[in-house]
Image 1 (cartoon, rainbow, N blue to C red):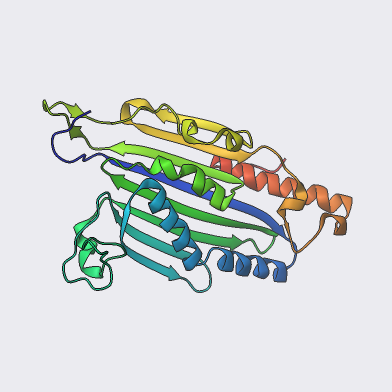
Image 2: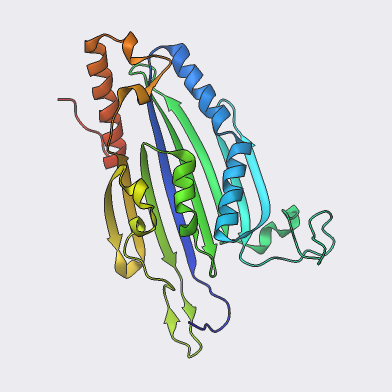
Length: 266
């Protein structure tokens, strides 16, 4: 497919990743938040997003990262499809004079539709003992590069209990004869781009609006082992009645997140 001028299509892949656990005591809940803050601090998130940029073949122009008090972190990267020359920028050029690393703040205004962002939201409920970690990720590109290439890497990096994925192609580009092209690749489901061994682990639901080039997939792990959801407490340390109550509370939390609605207690 030959285009007239630059490919103006904007492709955005958005994630919500969720990790759920039960932390029995207030100290366990504080320890869980501290663990998540350390495990997914701004530097770790920067490393993940840098690899995403490498996978999709994008060039990083600028990185902004922040760890928050009391918890959470965020990282934003501006990216480009092609290498960008920045005369006068020190320490970022290779031997051929092209950019080989992040650019100074002066170039932030040069792009407004190519970026990668992540924000984290760890939280804990003081009464029920349920603690959750949510990571929101957006990979937005324009041009030939596709964020779908990084899909399996991101799922593998977070190993979520639940994932909510949106993929949207916006705008149009033109063929040589002037015909508008509203998408430049075939897709009927985000699931097509998820590795088969990963698909086997999850129950998935699609909501796709093909005429709008909008694709939505929700994923929840099929298998449930209580030991994988206890933080600071082992299953052997719980009474049978406790195990049943905690399992019910965890599953209720997971299905509420998966369905996007509160479920009444029965």
